[in-house]
Image 1 (cartoon, rainbow, N blue to C red):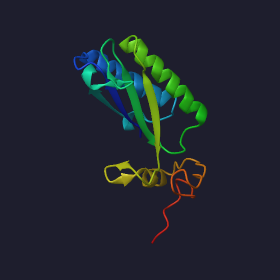
Image 2 (cartoon, rainbow, N blue to C red):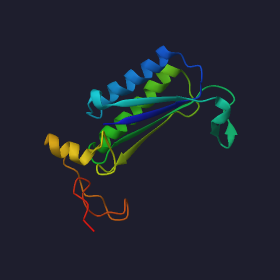
Image 3 (cartoon, rainbow, N blue to C red):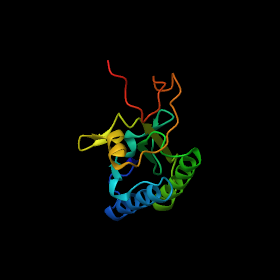
Image 4 (cartoon, rainbow, N blue to C red):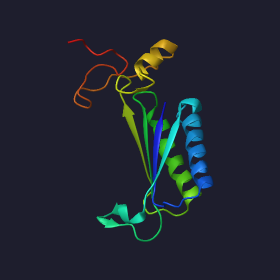
Length: 155
């Protein structure tokens, strides 16, 4: 259930280009990260270049873009994440042309910490009986020492 937010420094980006970005990222979510296209959301945020800063200065020439994705913790290997980052960077350049920095970030969220329609990812996986094998989260990294699909201790 990935949620992609794409920031592009072009408030006049044509809708067909936006659609190509959405379709391309959804395709990569399916082919590289093994996600469901029906559960993939792409949000495109178009911003003026003068409100986008690199090295403390507004972007004045060219275009830039950034992709941030929320995915469920532990559902992808390091190789899959690296492949997604590389291919998403290529997709941005292929569709948008030369970019100043073209960043891609994957944020792994604990399955108890988010969901859709009032159902956490933990409960979604549990109900579908498709619970991914997930390694324990090291103490100190997320403030927990239990596996991401283990229920929270009750207080």
